[in-house]
Image 1 (tube, rainbow over the protein chains, first blue to last red):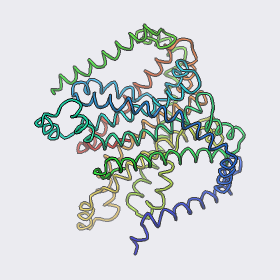
Image 2 (spheres, rainbow over the protein chains, first blue to last red):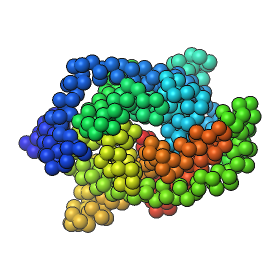
Image 3 (cartoon, rainbow over the protein chains, first blue to last red):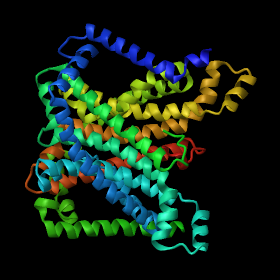
Image 4 (cartoon, each protein chain N blue to C red):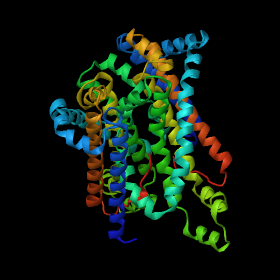
Length: 254
Length: 254
């Protein structure tokens, strides 16, 4: 009885309703200039969707996010596989990778302004910078962790060159590759809005800036909510893709 | 691979990286990408002109406050959610939502709520660190072996005793991993918040970024890189010292 009551299917809707209740109650206490109730946020969300401004902004934002993400994926996967296949190269590259990874990606923003200006190219560059290392590190780990027995078996079957990668290395590393793709797309969505706030303000970033400058808290919340939900949706889509492409890997970790 | 050979490879990797930086810098020039030698030669001037170390120390003090608050809340909530199916179900949807929320998107909102001062930066760093600490602690709390807890019960240890003598030691490695991941995100969030309002270390990066020469900008990036690596290594060292049973293999990627 108790166990059935604590199932996610039962509790999650309860959680959402309770949370919205607490949020609404808080909004009655906190001054309107600082906080907005969920009813007002949903109202703004509906209005901004109805007049087309929100879908248009999201569509604009998605462009640089997708281009930056795809560039990062296309580069990180082959580099990760090549570096990961050689213990010597992986050892030599590791300290550099850790060091560059320790630099907050947004600190590269001034460079992107110098190199690419304030518009599309700079936004793509920041998205790329924020997800490339995340994907690379996961691909690298996946290739490094391939069972030696698998590689020995492949060698005894005279599998070499391209076929070795296509039939053994990539499938064996794919759970890690997919983790990289999933974490990476979450980062890409983060980078998308970061870029719009740090370079010239456009699309969702512009909506966020305009509404917060006008102390329109309900609209500010609405944009933040849209970005978060979009990030969540992208990650879930990746999870589904993973289940579809590599059904043999039952994921147990989050 | 022997330890000596591994170290030789790492040093070679760093040497190749620095050399590539130097050559690229000579080709592109100071305005686009200053060479390593120029950055090192210009570093004393960078430190003096921008009060680099004083700003960095001030930023890190504020970071520490938000980070420690995040760790405490994350650890407590993580344990509670990991051990109670009811709390888990009630909080999980909201925690997942906050986890994907972009820190940059919160910056305009938090400026309205907290102003530009200490509270703002502490709140941003807190929000960046807390969910990572929470999530890793949560997974740790869920995976505490039931055998251990049953043994404790068999020896009639009280709930308080079980918590401090069984749960906490079992959780300790997870907490340390969570704190390490949280710290990396705290530093990123600090730079995002500070670059946005142009104060502290992030302000230095911003101001150095609008200079004609990239010498100071690269000097600042090099500094935050060293700080990030040093803090990360310090936490790793502390983990190995205080929890020798903890193995790096358990490392949970973010």
